[in-house]
Length: 539
Ligand code: PFF
Image 1 (spheres, helix red, strand yellow):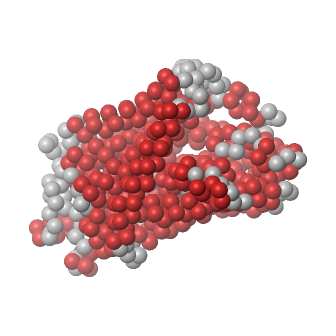
Image 2 (spheres, helix red, strand yellow; image 1 turned 90 degrees about the horizontal axis):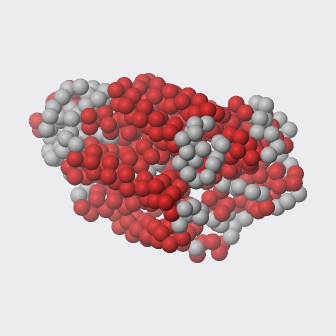
Image 3 (cartoon, helix red, strand yellow; image 1 turned 180 degrees about the vertical axis):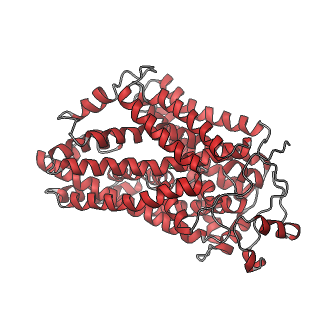
C-alpha cells in the first residue's frame, strides 16, 4: 500500500450539533419533499398514505438513518473508506452508494437549474398561458426519446451557474462551505415556505384541494404498491443508504448526540413534507375551483409536470402570482441546492480519501466531471425522458438494493450490530435497544427484499412508461450496471490516500478521561492509541 501525506491531517468537523442538524436537514429537505411527496401521497391513498408513510419512517427510515450515522461516526470516513475499515472488500458497497449519489447529482442539478430559470421567469410570468407547451417545447425543446446532442442554452446557462456554486461550496469545505450555506439557507427556506403555505391555504377553493389530499382511501392500504411507494419516498427523502449520511456524520465531533440529532432531522423532514403537501394541494384546489372542475381532472399532479407546468398555470391566475411564483421557485432552488451539496461533499470526500487529494482538488475533479455529464445529458433535447428513467431506476432499484446490501453486510456478515448499537448509545441520550438491530438486520432486509423483487419484476415484464426497450436498457439498467462496474473497479484501484494503519474506532466515551474529549485533536488520538481496547483491522 502506498503512503502519501497529501491528505489533510485533521478531519474537519461541524462546529456544533446545530451545524450538523441544519446540514442534515438541508440534505433531507429537497426536491423530493416539494415535488415528489405531494403527488405520491395523493396517488397512493391520500390521507390513508400517511399510515404506510409513518410505518416506513419508524421501521426503516429512522433505524437506517441511525445505522448511517453510526458507521460514519465510528469509522470517521466517507462511505468507501468507512466500509473498508470494517472489512476491506466492503469498500465496494461504499462505492456503489457513492456511484448512485453521483448519478442522482447529475440529474438533480438539472432540476435545480430549471427551478432557477423559473424563478427568473416568475417575475414576468414568461411561461404565458400554455405552460405545458412552454415547458417542454419552448424551454426544454424536448425531442423524441433519442440521444440528441443539441445543447439548449436556456438550460445550459443556469446549469453552469448551479455547478459553479456547488464547486465553490464544496471547495470551501465542511465548515466554511456546507455548514454556512445550510445555517443561512435552511431557516430562510422554512420561513419562505411557511409564507407560501399560509398564502395557499387562504386562497379561495383551497379546502377542495386539502380534502382531495387528506381524504383517506383505506382500500389503498391492502395494495403492496402503496407500501413500496411509502418506503421509496422515505429513503430518497431522508437521503439514507446513499453513503451521504455516512459522510456527514463522519464530520461529527467525538461527543455528538447521534440519535437525538437523527430524530430531529427525521421529524423536521417529515413535517416539511406534509407542509409541502398542504401547500401544493391548497394551491391546486384554488386552480380546480377557478376552472370549476374536480382536483382529479387537473393534469400533472406529480413530478416535473406538477412543478413546471401545473404550478406556473396556477401562479398566472393568482392575485399576487409573481410574488408567489418567486417564493415557490426560490424555495425549490434553495431546497435542491442544500441537498445537492450534500451529495457532492460525499462524492468528493470519497474520491479525496481514496486518491489522496485535498479538499479543493477533489472538489474540482468531482464537480467538473459531474457538471460535464450533467451538461451533456440534461441540457440537450432528450432531457426529460432520460431524467425520469434514471430517477426511476436509481431510486426504486439501486437504492433499495443498496439498503438491503448494507443491512445484511453490516449485521449478518460483519456482525457489527452490537458494536454499532453500543457506539450509538455511548454518545447519544436517546438509547437504542435490541429492537434497533432487529429492525435493521431482520425486518428491513425482508420487506426491502420483497419490494425490490416486486419492482424489478414489474419493470422487466411491463417496461416503463411505454419507452422503447433500448432506451430503458441505456438509462435504466445500463446506468445501474455502470455503477456496479465502477464500484468494482474503484475498489480494485490501489489505495493511494493517506495510509493510516493505526486507525482505531473511538472507544466508548466513558473509558476516556473528560479532558481528552477534544474532537479530532491529534493529541487525543496520540495519547489514546497505544492502549486502546479494541483494535480493528483498519483496511
Ligand atoms: N433527500 C433529497 C430530497 O428529498 O430531495 C434528495 C437526496 C439528497 C437524495 C441526498 C439522496 C442524497 F444522498
